[in-house]
Length: 306
Image 1 (cartoon, rainbow, N blue to C red):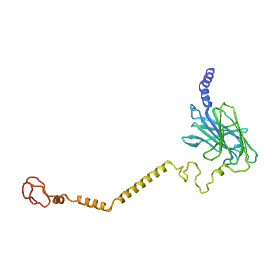
Image 2: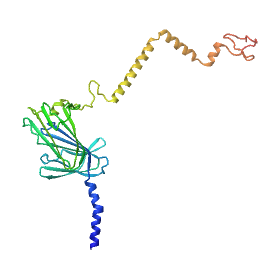
Image 3: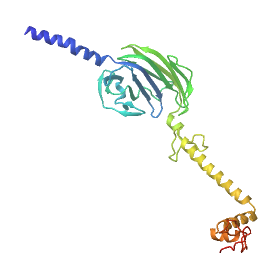
Image 4: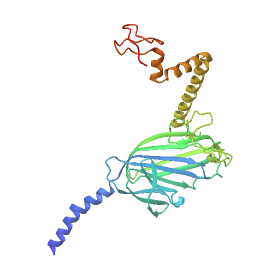
């Protein structure tokens, strides 16, 4: 019995322990948190983009924290090529935190949720994002959008200077907090003043005729036309110019010249026999070509045939 127990212990230490460690030793190359207050809901839209390290073995089970008050996630997905594809996940609530567990078969993971901790009733409005990473993060990146009609926005820790987003026109602040060790808490606090309840989507999508609002759609002025449209325009222009040049050259030739050209083509189009009759025939005796109307050869005097 002692031999069997010893064998089981050795099996656990040598086989199962490295396997468990391989499953839990997860490293993220980067984690980017995007905070979009009052974007399309009167709450805080939180978007987490997490990229596993290049040497991470896949698939791997990953558990990501989010506030329990947020309820169920808006989206849990992985990036396949250029498309986000949703994946099944499980939720486990522990106190004021919920763990979202996903089996990641792709190195890029996305988690989205709405946090009701931001209220439009506050003045000034405040929000604090808190995230404790269960894994090593080599770089933690933060991006915060300033809401429509907001002023005196302050972010702690300080991020870079605000830049205008090309898509929605909102001022966006970006910065890196550097590496984050496992189980270390990351906190981001922001405050701003805003006296109305206007959402960002209502401010930058004024279209009412169903036309798309995306910045990559061709504009009426043509500055944003896709490459294939410019190719078609170039081909059409070349055909049009060629037609104009052809018509100009035809119309620039005098009518008398066109008549002479047609007459010449008609003459050269006669049969060989008719042409031979006009220019004379060859003498069957000496081979000299006669002139039109000759009945005798001018060279040897032989009577010509035909």
